[in-house]
Image (cartoon, rainbow, N blue to C red; front, side, top):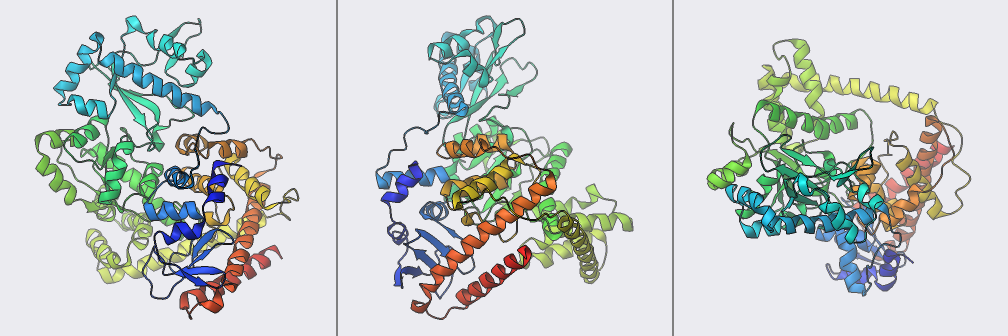
Length: 601
């Protein structure tokens, strides 16, 4: 029995949910107005028999007691699991499987303590002087567990320290903190640098950032990529900031370690860093469960603005336009991550957050409050990206930004359209017909892609799947082993999977799409399940067969899920008042089941 199974065996979902909202008996189930959206007629159903909940109204999603707590408390999977473990009296203990990642976490933790001891030793005077010159007080240095790596003359100290802690040389090399050369000699990767331990949200050290004390180049370096560290999937300071971000419903993303440290020292505790790179969709997805607004306070120079534009293009425009053209990969299923508004803080040229916060905190706070929406920022940037004096340039600009506009809040769309028309120097009344024509072109492209996809379909799903759990495992195994397979049926939800761990792995996979990032961000409690799925051996098949197998697996899992929801509604329906939401949910389920059967036909 896994920890998740043990917790579920000891807790009842009805008791957990009724601790937040009032439930009323409805046949063999319980009902209530949905706690996640406003409604007058109850469409939120809790099923004690299945130990699940589902909203048949606007949310159109559900899950188990873990997913309920995640959504209600704005928690990640591991946090919700630990909270419920406390209620159930279950010890989380250590993972059942001792993975390579586990030892890297332990090595990093030991190394962080070693670097801290060097900082506070006689050898750390130069590092302490540097921190003082940057205005970092001792209390802040301790909060961020800052340290110092020894000079080259003592470069074997870290290796000796880690060996004395019981780690083998092979394990230490996996952490990438030590380099081993062809002649067999070893040396520390970090030498004579200020050390910034980089932690995941749970406070585990996944790697290190380091700054040269003497300003030698490169000024900043990071731990090379490992099984637990990929800087594209980590936000520096999130372990310290997440409570403030939840409280304020707003996160501010800056670029560097010093920016974050300065902000926290001056009581701006909702600030985190993307560690010197353009913010990634993986990083954004981590914040969607914590806040409603994400503010990017990045470099104000031309290169910095271009980097911001490229990232907004990747995260917002590309995904919006793909959805318009029929690509169905969904970033951030509603079960745990709601939408987030992205804003841009326009910093004065020549000023970075660190300077502003230390020297003019009032201006910094004013600039944050005056941040503009990503849509406004990108509309203002159209003349930089396109030649708006030519018809070709105007068309390209509209193709670039149209998906983003239509994916934005309907109440803001007209305002954005008027601003775009002004930038293109055309009458705003002429904009809609042009956009409709672009939409028709997208539809034709979608139909063409659909036809090509249908031609690649083969006959049947694998016969090896003789149980519900093996179906889920096989589906996840195909996804994890085939990163090129990104099309997920639009109607498919993580809720369709039986096991909580599988839902979380699937959700994280949608957000990352990369095994190494998934390994570095997944909660420790799920790591054994992830390793188990990755160990599944698949028969070699070509891409078209993989696409077909995956499509049929999703179809079978979704059908199984819909039938269980139907059963739940039938046992509840007679006890419920007439509800438009419930009636529409039944119609949609029946329609979808017919579609599934016709597709197999």
